[in-house]
Image 1: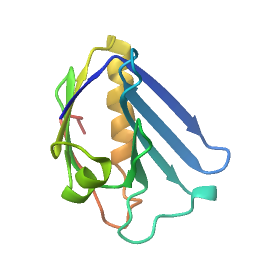
Image 2: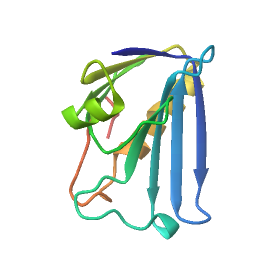
Image 3: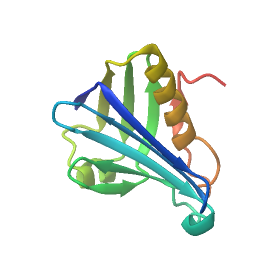
Length: 135
C-alpha cells in the first residue's frame, strides 16, 4: 500500500506525561496516518509487552503496536506491519510505503519524529527495527 505524503503535523506535550504525535497526510483530501506515543504521567507505563505507541488512520481505526520494521530511504519510508495490525487498520498490504514530497526541513522532522515514536525501551521488550535512521 502506498501513500503520498505532502503535509505533516506534530504535537507534543510534557505537562501531563510525555506525549508526541506525528501526522503524515495528503493535503488535498487529508488521507494519511497519525502515529502517537504517550508514556508516563496520565498515560501511565505500558504493561509488559504493550507498545507505548499507536497508529491511527484517517477514518479513526486505531492499533497499538504492530510496526515491525521502519526503513528510512530519504524521500520514502517503508513500514512493515504485523498481520493483525494490517487487518485492523484495513491495509491492503503488510508493507506501507510513504512517499514523502516534503521540504528538507520537514523530511528531517519526520525522520526525527519516527525515531522518537519507535525507539526506546518503554514497551516491556517490544522493539521496532529501525533501518537507515543512524545511531
